[in-house]
Image 1 (tube, rainbow, N blue to C red):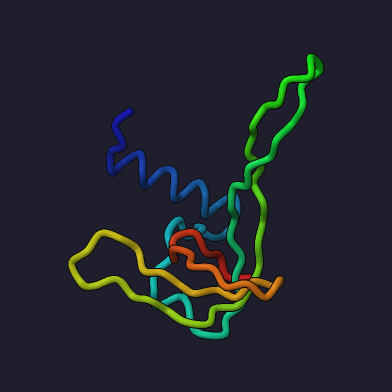
Image 2: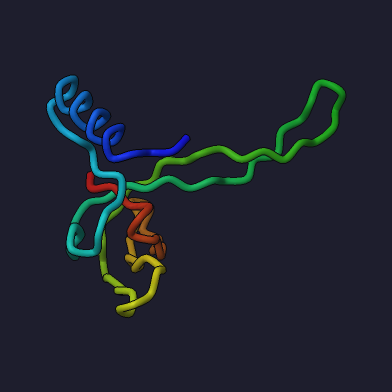
Length: 104
């Protein structure tokens, strides 16, 4: 499907009429600061047993929360997102891409 300017305007207008706002799809480095509470999702490997007794590997989406401890910005001109060093509520630190983070 080709997205034309007319179609895009119609979608934005209808979204504004129904919800009153347009949600952001992508976050930028300027939206995050040190000490800010954030949440993100990860996939964790889970081994399940089938009815026949076989082990099956599956992945479950797990929601995480924490606070930004440090920001690693991407160099200018790169298409890779910046990273944030996030300390989870469990005390462990994680490097998470800024596009994966959501302000809590």
